[in-house]
Length: 190
Image (tube, rainbow, N blue to C red; front, side, top):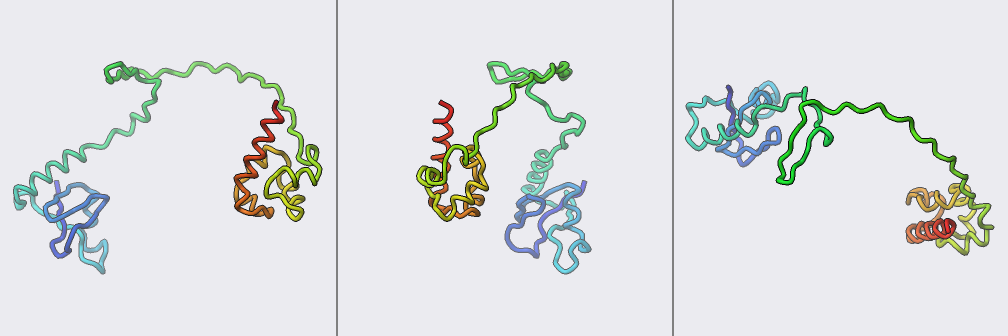
């Protein structure tokens, strides 16, 4: 097993492979080898130096052992994702994983939903003057553009700031315009 510590020529604390290294920290693992190789970054000094375990101080040995334990073995890839349907959670917080994942049962065909009725268009609901009076931020200049871009009250209620800005609505009216469109939708459902 190879051990690496921070190059003593580099001052301060450094980060390598998302690990913070000071003068007493010792790391181990294949992913650190390239940072001890002078050919990896030829124009700068190596960030790590390989060390022999016997040459380490007691503090460094302890930290190396602790690092190796924390890193441990990676989880085997064949386990995959454990879904909540594959284990039971008990009252005391423990859980029991079933030996075999439950196989999904044959799915019933999707229920047939009644077709949605088409939402009325803005041009059907409001004439141009009503549209300007009801919705804040709609003016004589931008009313036609807004009605061309947003065909229904729902599309107006869900409009993004960029879309509203593109049709000429000023930014201080965005929220009020969407709120009014939501209110009109609620009133239309009643």
